[in-house]
Image (cartoon, rainbow, N blue to C red; front, side, top):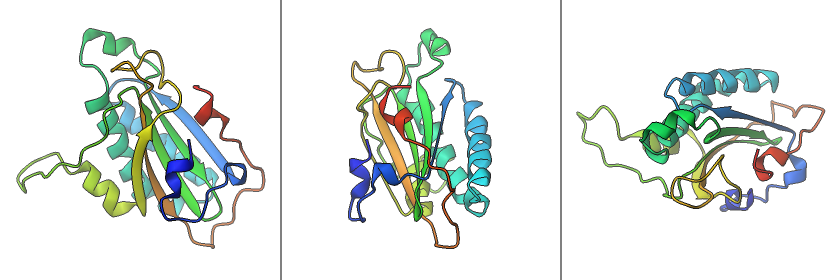
Length: 180
């Protein structure tokens, strides 16, 4: 799951994760607010509250994109309670936000006109994070994937300064790889 995050950066050792948190989001747009609250609580507990504004903006965009573009638009959508998951992972020098959804279609950055009210989400993700990308999910996102596969993970990486020591008790990343 973490291999695609290496893109030109020093290796990320899964055993070196010092914090990991995950939440399941309902298939409703109100979930974006819940994702921001979850992010604030998690970052505060990791003493990273000063990163909240940038991370919350990116989390909001990734979750909105998953809800808007990755979930089926039919009536069954209301019953998909575990289709989108938000993962936050912290190492000493970086933080990763990852959103897993049931679609295998990769995100496409739009070229929105200046007058458009949407279409700039991935531009914001690129602008506020140090790196971002996506890859097919190695496990189902919850239930059956929208297009028959396991779905995808869209992630954003933030470099942290040395002024934020890692929490003393490590948390495993099992939730990222076991399908929960």
